[in-house]
Image (cartoon, one colour):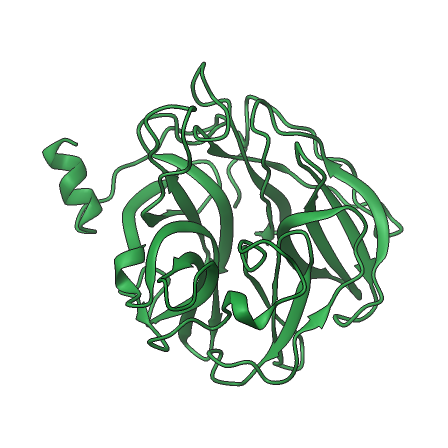
Amino acid sequence: MTSNLKTLAAGSLMLAASAGANPLFTDQYRTADPAALVHDGTVYLYTGHDEAKDNKGFFKMNDWLVFSSTDMVNWQRHGPRLSVTDFSWAKGDAWASQAIEKDGKFYWYITARHKDDKPGFAIGVAVGDSPLGPFKDARGSALITNDMTTDTPNDWDDIDPSVFIDDDGQAYLFWGNTKPRYAKLKANMTELDGPIEPLDLPDFTEAIWVHKKGELYYLSYASDFPEKIVYATSSSIKGPWQYRGILNEVAGNSPTNHQAIIEFKGKDYFIYHTGAAQPDGGEFRRSVAIDRLYYNPDGTLKRVVMTSEGITEAAK
């Protein structure tokens, strides 16, 4: 790592990223599992950080990165803003995350492997005063642990948190692998407010993202394996959800997929990862890409067209 990148990682320097191309970042910042937050005219992009040396082992992910843009074309890097070591209960595997704002605080929900007293993957939450933090563990313990969801035999069913705040201010946490779940959050955003509820979603794998457009709620997720992104709609955040079909096909040479959907300055965007950053690509060489998202007049979504050019027209 160069001295400049060391400074960047410490958060005191921001460097411009390449503009108008997919994937967005093609150097050593291998990014994955994107989530995005729009705040005060800026898009903040939160990603995982693939560091595995090759495609023969397993994920090596120790921290989460943040990028920002005011036009969806030019991006600035803010380096790692949160690490597994920031959570006393965690011991590795900084997997998918999502950040959201409520009442001037920013809550960053993350996936990490729990220490051996509660083995398996868990979901935690950090809090900060700005989209860039600094962030700290908001609880001192995990919010969701593997022993809270005992209806699957695997220990990675509690991953990929997605949080949504409805128009009435009620927040909901969605998550899951092989079995999708959701629960209400208390006003403090750090505790569950009621039971964990199952969701009825066909061919569900992981990577839930919830958003609302007009009067419709949209729930997209990764389906089957290799994963494509599909979606469902509902007139209520609590469902029932009507399956609508494929939104995004298998993303290049990456067997996983993970999406974020945002509206920014009057346009809609689909953010995802692919394995196209390097020739050897694949599961441990994922990088974020962005393309436009379009709605049909009846509220259904047009299938995303993945491009090499990415976003070339600056949002104004």
